[in-house]
Amino acid sequence: MSRTETGTGVAERPPAPKATARRPSRPRPPLSREIVETRILGVLKWVTIAFFLVATLFPFYYMVMLAVRTIEDLALDPGALWPPRGISLSAFGDVLRSPEDGGQGFLLFLRNSGMIALASVVLTLLVSILGSYAIARLQFFGRRQVNFLFLSVYLFPAILLAIPLFVFFTRIGLRGSLFGLVLVYASQIVPVTIHMLRNYFETVPESLEEAAALDGASRLTIIRKVSLPLAMPAIMATSLFVFMIAWNEFLFALLFLVENRQNWTVSLGLSQLAGSIEVAKTTLMAGSVILTVPIVILFFATERLLVEGLTAGAEKG
Amino acid sequence: MARRRRTLAQQEARAGYALLSPTLIVVLFMVVLPILWTIVIAFQSLRLRNLRTRLFDFQFTLDNFQTVLTSPGFLEALKVTLIYSIVGTILSIALGLVAALVVRKPFKGRTLVRASMLLPYVAPVVAVTFVWQIMLNPELGIVNAIGTDVLGWKESIPFLEQRTGTISILGLDLKVPLALTVVILYQAWRYFPFSFLFILARLQALPGELDEAARVDGATPLQRFWHITFPQLQGVIALLTVLRFIWTFNEFDDIYLLTQGGAGTEVVSVRVFRYLTGRGDIGAAAALSLVLALLLVVLLVLYFRFFVNREEAKAI
Image (cartoon, rainbow over all chains, first blue to last red; front, side, top):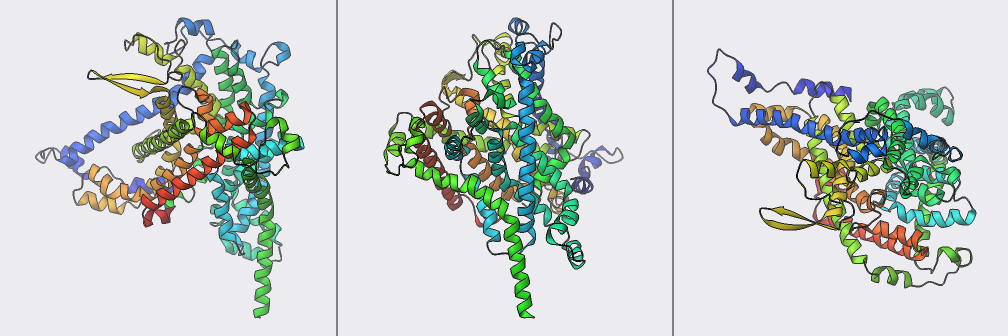
């Protein structure tokens, strides 16, 4: 991304006419369409940026603000833009404590979500590194069709896939198990990660692999020792992508795990919490904060890497 | 020599299949076969309570299709799905385009602005739908608090529970599907970052020379956008239209979590879920989800036939 940024930076110098207009030695030119448009757009640009920032950030600010207020406080003053009567962190305790201690047991859900997300990352990577390497590097019959087949999977609604998987897992007794869910997540994400990784493997110079092959290295050794280290940025980006999808996922978690509270994910726990009337809205927001914070931290820490990985190949238009 | 080369090619093909086989197995067993199985289920009279006995009962029937196609509310759900996905797709791409254009040139804090704009998309769906619910809540929400205290609304508006609302413009009372509008606006808010990301990537890869040449020739900023930048974005916008439409059309989580499909926001996928969990009618759920998928294919074929020219199709 930085490469392209500097590239545009050079090309997009401040518009020339504006500079002439400000030079005092020359007579002031009449307000041309160019100047009017540039000025109006210059202002509009910042207004628009401000609008987008408020629209995207305010809901998250609101979430945190409600999480640290008490429900009585909120009912008294629902329009407040900051906590008017100090902050209270008790809602977080309520959400995190286990049910035996009168809480909602989110600590356990956090562990479940983390385990599911990590296992999905490992499984997805294992499968898609091999597959994407094959599609990027090796000539074999059906190579192009395979990629198309994978992507056409996304034509089908998740709910359609959910039905047979629901029936199947019910029958073999894996419904409600974390392993079944990981398997479902991995299979759903693999087509995308193959696509992401393949784009990257294609940019790794082939000569390096050929050199290793001449030294007598086997195919798997070449992948492990040469291609993988070179593709590390893409693999990191892909891992983050998978982690986020698995952490955020809701429909399959709902269908598969709802009857087994021990295995609930944070998303599922939160949605079930919302169903009961005696849970205060502020507690719900504390749960939302707990669900969101890990993802937001991960995202801000790795934003550049993730964006580059996701849009790799999109520049070609 | 020729013989040796052929064996090398064969070796490579064999390695290719070997490396691809885990992927193929996962996708085959977890995606392709389930899709085919859905087709079978759609023609069986299968229910959650007779799952043990009837699963391998292959007496095919069209009852499920009759049930779902003639049930009250089906056409309404179809209409809602279409409105939701068409308007939602257009809005989210338009917002993404505007957002990409304003952060195109470097400025101080740009990275942070860009990351903030991606937040709605990366945040967990359950968390963001709940925030919207509470923001729009009639008693506790900040929107109604500001509306009644500052903007002088006579009473709070239950945005997500009310089917139709009335907007008065110049003495005219316009009826709008309130909850559906709110759900579509939420959709645009949550998914514009996706379009933003891809349009921005494309914008930054555009060669600067054309724009520069047009500037020298005296084209104004708006003219340059309309005649130079925008045509070069058409490929990525066409691609986004297809992707966003597919995903919005199949969307379940957001609507289910926001309104449970109530107040005139029941899209087809929510109906499928209702058949599956509420009534335990697996056959009907499968039939309806097939109808949904088929309809999507038809719409996509129409789109490619009438709206996408050859140039754009290549980009996709």
